[in-house]
Length: 554
Picture 1 (spheres, one colour):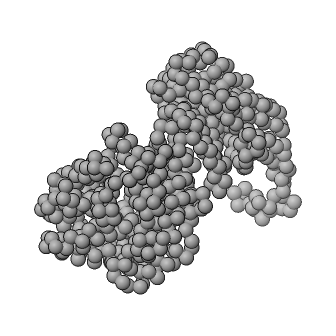
Picture 2: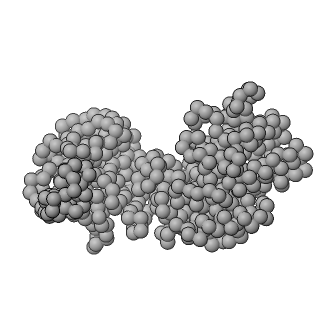
Picture 3: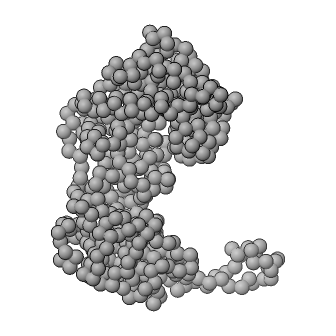
């Protein structure tokens, strides 16, 4: 689609404008050729990424930077900076946290290999041949470092394996392939549901997909595409009613971060062609339409599209409907995702914020707080579908230490081996949460039953999107981040713009909403509404999508 192609070029030109204006040109500076943005100091990773984008518009016949010598000069300086900062063993430092970092070196290589291939393809331009030779030398020196390196996180393995595979393809040196095979022998951590180990829908799923695409190409092995296909299919059930990506079950730093599908654009586009899937083409087109409508920048994939698709943004028959009504139970990941048009909900096993409900652009999470022996919140030990409901169960066990049966070796409490003590068991507190869709198909009913010991204070913590208007029969206020209210009765309504939800009925049997003895503080990033009760209890709370004109008591 031509308008998308032109947007991709224009936004890459804007990135190049920034790169050229911010590049350090002081010949006496150690950072000559670099740029300094994110952390206030020069960084080779960011510098080479920006230089790669700049070279893509230099080579693009429809760009105003086509053949502009200013880009060649800037690229030459950036490459010189990277050459100076490359460690003797071939690795690069990632100054914020990792040094002699094989994984960060791999991410650099995976980006600039595309630049190298574009330079080779444009060999008729005499200005480019010396740059191609220097970039090749940098890549292969990096290969030597990566071959001796290690990793920290699951996705690092595939970044290293894919970068080393590129080094093998470029050089023909089997050492690089052998080094890549050391990682690949572990088996890819993508399951049958399409999820990778880190469950990072906001970032690392996409990163892993990129590495699988590179591995498939460099090793001529189509099996890696299966991981990408399954993940992209799964991701279609991770899109909330406002178009954002659900990230609240991630194990990484994107957890709870509001992101969009933008970074998945290239993957949906290229996989629509590789796997002949019109649905993926529809998704790619929708992503770029949404980016344009929202005024966001196009993802930084101009070089990949130029190299791998020859600039072809033809979506073909991109009319397949994108699912907005579905129910998915990902047992391996311990998550349920349900979407019903403009509202949906999620259930997550093993975490405090176990339920999320979204109506349009307004989101609520539910957490059950309790101070019971060493437990501070409900965390479902099991999540199962039974009949017409999802059941989440958790037992908070009571216990007390008993004296040692024999005199310990020390009287210093901190040096005693407390694992050798026997314990008394009980009393226990049993939680069962049943979540079912309402027959009106306007939301969910959440029944919380707590049995076992009596008189235990329980608090329902309902975290709401900050900035919403929160009201009931008795009050109305703007729900500011880090604010809170105890709702004694009635129906609580939260609304913003055309999005609204109703929650209730409310109840308040006690005022213990702060938590005690090390309980997790309320979220600083949400407005929290509290309902409270004592055990034993059996409470039904509904989360409903409602029109903004409906009154709270309606």
